[in-house]
Length: 509
Ligand code: UN1
Image (cartoon, rainbow, N blue to C red; front, side, top):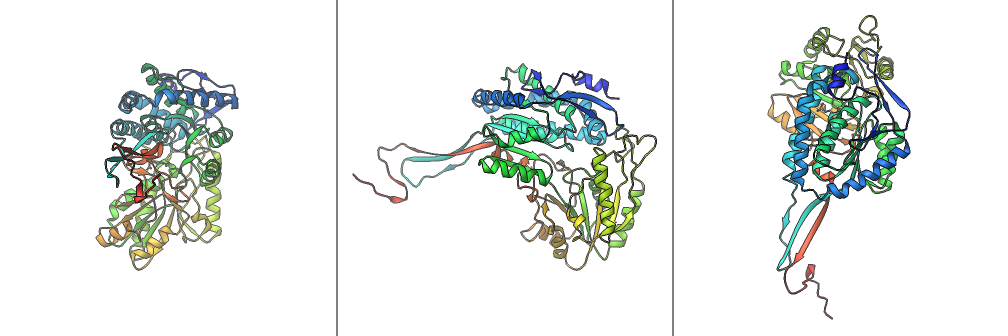
């Protein structure tokens, strides 16, 4: 199913695991990767031991000393070549993402496109890493701030975006002069191996030292090594809120830096002034795309009572047309969940919904029979609920959409939308200027991402990506997110023949 692509990506043998660039090693146990698409073994990867990790971190530290003095635009040129390589490998890598993770081929390609886009963004940025110049209060003094490379960056990524999230972090870190150690999800190790392999080739061609980009495959023990390690200046972690709290505790205890991109509980508000055609496409894609396994997946739809029945009817209709099946077949809309554990979380959530008094209006269920042998395919569900339900307050990584009714003013809907612990993405469907502006104002959405007339998922790389509250507060990708990957320095230079003190202080002796 995927042999040709693995060959095209240069990773058809089982010799991959830990990597500091061109060399591959790993004395840990073998990790098998099974596809949720058909349950078949795709390949095996060697995991990293503590000793492997030690070798990696030492190389990363050493490489940092060399990498940080290479001019940023030259580092950008290396990232530009990485982007070119990704363009060449887009189809192969997109298919591997689809097959190992289970998202549709279209979405697999989309993820690789995000990698290409962040490369382009980073190349431009490599000539724009600037700070401000400030007028000094002292005569003949100059004051400015500048950004320097930070050090070793640890990237801990999740299965749902097995390649793009690493690229967002890595491309920025590289142009900023940092070195990167990546611990990917154990559920998608081959995607990680493929990415590292592509980048390593580009790095080698440019005589970039070993250790600028490293891969450490392993379980949570590797994540803990990274978090505890004072030699890792910044830990950028994507995953569950539970994991993020742990990482945060450990890294904060050593006063290290973190970027945390954790759970979401994203809602779309649908007001009486909404364009219902736009709403439908945005909501359905937001809820069932990637089988509900995006951090930005639409989990709640908060609909005004006057249009509630109409919206409900159109959604139920649309859900009847959704095709579930092999994600590599472009006729299908929804592929499998990542594994049977995720299926159990989904079925448990359905029980919970009914227990709390919710009403399931589009029935769920696990599919079996021909084409569904992996046991990971589930039916997308719609349930009518109250926002206060415990299950609604939680992020279930599955295609379950909650319908919630609101009445009166849009501020009531905003209250409902904000009344969850997470704060990643949000959106409002309205053609009413007042409603849209209120939603975006300080009384509006409390999320890191707030959209008007588009859904909650599918953020572009040009914007800063991340969220508030239990989502963790970090920002990755576009805008000025790069600043988190650098250390900031304020410089004051005296070119007079006196030493005037600040704040007018006199100190004569
Ligand atoms: C994630 O789910 O962790 O906005 C990232 C989106 C994608 C990224 C999601 N660009 O849906």
